[in-house]
Image (cartoon, rainbow, N blue to C red; front, side, top):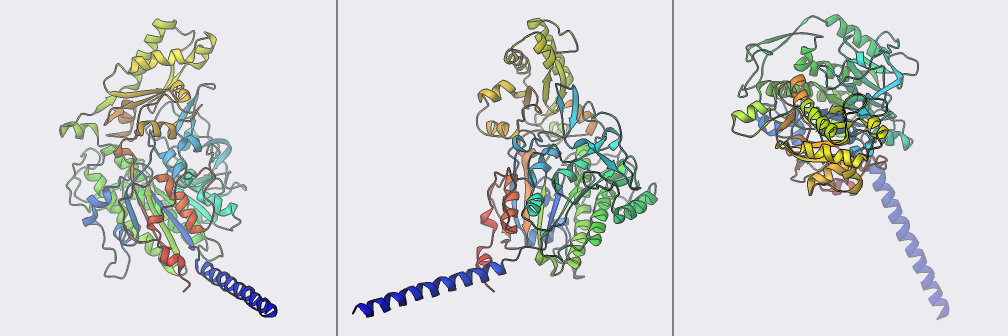
Length: 584
């Protein structure tokens, strides 16, 4: 009996061993089939409100054209998990902070990028988000073109001009990105980012990008910096691209309007819009037309041809940001005819590029994980809103600064140097810190007086001070969350305005055109998220996803840990769990 029991026990052990071995083998087989995508293609459209995809959908190319070619937006809509109500839960939505968040999965309070630029009270200088004097700009001839000059006093007509920047890098970004984590995991991934705007390209690429490329409007060429190019030479393909671009300067760019023409147009910018338009290539104005989109996709196509994307053992990442949409949006607003035109032009050029990617990547687009999203939305222009019976307008930051200074003068006396407000920038007010210290004033009391003065203005909903943040004395609901997500000590202002809906800063409006994006209201924070490819379940999802959810979702699909400061969740509702479990 004992012998029989021992045999039975041995049999049980063997059976358990067999089952475990079989399970491990099956698991191994399943894992082997969970191939990572060969390429992650990130497409960011600057200032692309989510509603554009529904408003203009009937004018997009078909998802599958009769020629056998793929369409643009409609193709992605048909193949993607589409989350139209996604958002940035931040107090102020702007290009640098948006791009910094998308692939890091972290809000500005962690990334350290609250704005495009901020004021340093200690040095009394404006600091640009991607400035780095130790990383000189590399021009098309392979020389370092360290350009001297300070960052602009406020937003200038062309803040992307390199004439005001000595060098560029992601050194101010405190977070890692999805691309960084691919390389941190030991993969030999190729990481390249491209945009007309330097901040867009650099912050998408992260710290370990092989190349971040942006466009210099002054020299009419694509450039990078020594941060990426240790030998101070652009890759050969970029030099050849620049020869082509520079040779085209001054040539006529012809484009025929594509829209139904329902939105109003600005005749001073696009005379006779509705007829064939002619633009001089290389001009600043040309970047706010479909030529800027063509310029960007041409650079992306050259990058696509230059490297063996998707042909190695690791997943590669190509990130592209289309900056021209933002330029058009600022000039005319989201309800204009030009915004229709630029959106439809992007649709056609996107289709062309997707077909190029399909032919380039072994296995076609089924082996490509595609993300289409935006860095922020935009407000309708105050003029358009007022014509349609809505309360809207502007806040003059200079006038507000003067009223603050007068009140503090009366309370604490005049400063020995300058005014009590050293700088007003993007609804941020930076107080004269050195005078506060020299007079031994209590900063919280000075802020209290400044806040009280600002709140006298009926166009202002809330005013937040640095003391409010320290004491967690913040407005209720969504404003508290947005404020906590956005405030960066030492970079954010001593006071931050939350305006009433549809009120914009006067200096932004006057210098950038009809409208801007600088709040946490729905029109500025709502963006589309479209994800297609490996293990994604296509469909429209009403989920109110967050921009910070993109990075951990991509990380899950790539089999890597999320970026260092990532705080979003995996969008599990859009993942095809059956395909994950498949062993076929």
